[in-house]
Image 1 (cartoon, helix red, strand yellow):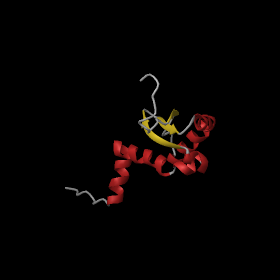
Image 2: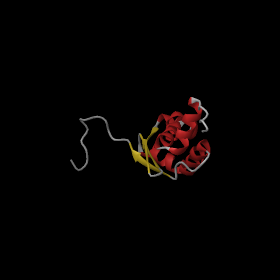
Image 3: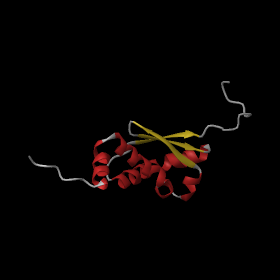
Image 4: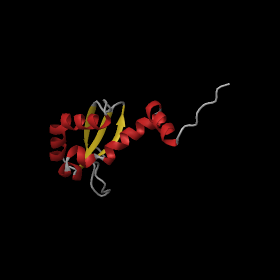
Length: 110
């Protein structure tokens, strides 16, 4: 009977990263960690990634002009993200205006 060779923790984590949802989440986490280098200092100060759903990265921008700038840079940002991951990790970018966090500000439709 042949015994299995023990695996190092690094080997186990590497296999998990390749074959599990945990691995995919770790790859997505790189976007948050590298946001400033992916979009540049100025854009990073005025935007942040929120979530990834079905290959679409949802990003909040603090104002309409910053949404426009993100939209203008969209394809470059996607290229940088996918280059970082060495595969197509994100296929699209959905840019939203950051919700107003001030509860005293009237909301449209309220």
